[in-house]
Image (cartoon, rainbow, N blue to C red; front, side, top):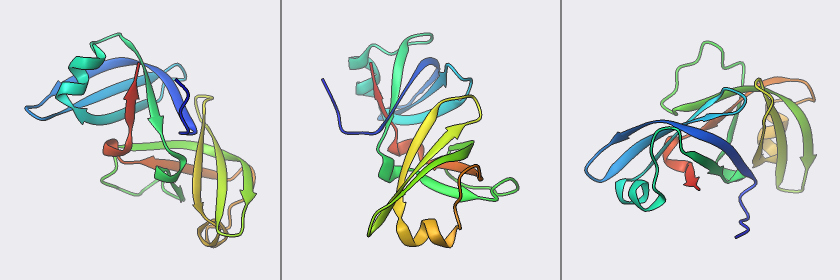
Length: 140
């Protein structure tokens, strides 16, 4: 199966916190970053997820928020991944921002062109890719 989501990050399940309806799944990427996903408990079962299982964190580029100067910030989003801007493509409405994570992986964000310019994004800028746990899809 091929999917349109730009960010398909391979990892290993490090832990699962089960709930009656939803469960929290923590993946560790090869680069060492952790990504937390909140998915239904029935999905945990149907995917056969358990500790040390291989899985993918799938994140649409439009679900990635880009933050600059986030070092002292506190957010409710579980996934705040540090990196540097390695590519910017401006369109008439949106900009595509490629961020190389500190561990070496890449995550792509699709943000408004206005926001990219308001943040004054430049190549090599230190930024954070921010993703709510509920916006992470898990695949195997």
